[in-house]
Amino acid sequence: MKSIKAKEGEIFDIELEEDLLKRNEELAEKNKHLLDKNKVMAIDVMGSVGSGKTSLIKNLIVRLKKKRRLGVIAGDLTTTIDAERIKEEKVEVVQVNTGKECHLDANLIARALKEFDLRNLDILFIENVGNLICPAEFPLGSHKRIVVVSLTEGPWMVTKHPYIFREADLVVINKIDLAQAMKVSVESITKDVHRIRPELRTIPTNCLTGQGIEAIIEILSL
Ligand code: MG
Ligand code: ZN
Image (cartoon, rainbow, N blue to C red; front, side, top):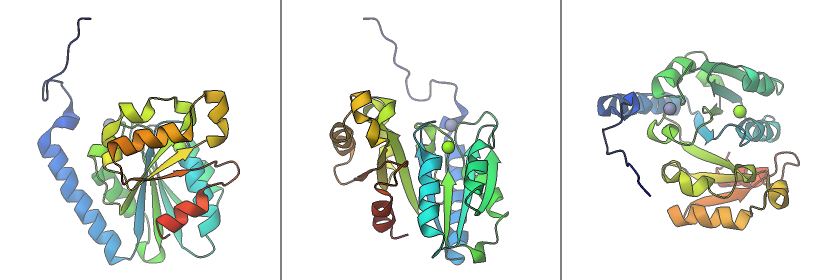
């Protein structure tokens, strides 16, 4: 088969601009410093549209809100659907609409952080824009990064997006109740993750029943 492979730097993509990535990293460090100063732990939740990022955050909030002071930054292109869903749990939510941008960056997070009284927060969840590609390249200053993969995304999701798993601290394998219908097993997705990084932790979850949520809280010491 005839095929064309893009060489590095050949694609017109502002996101590959090295200066920009470097500037983003500097801002991410600043964000982390600010969070540390205020003793806030920030968790970047990444994953495709429909993987269950919002549901996961809601599940974590339900279990944590009695013992921790929580906040959420909800990233999305143009809608406020996720932020509204999270607000139902009565925690502080800041919506960040990126317009056409398919990822959050450290500058947007710096702006969002100004909307919180950080002294009154223990944990800040950041729901990234639904995308498994560029969020990997844009650290936000978070302390932990979770990747959510759902069995409904089919058998090749992990293998096709290796980079995002290199930057992750935990992989949540969601919608495990649909394994049979999708003919995708938790075991095969786990194997794919471990082919990329053998030491990376994976937790199977079902956000409808809450299965696996306590395990996440334990692993991340939330
Ligand atoms: Mg969402
Ligand atoms: Zn992007």
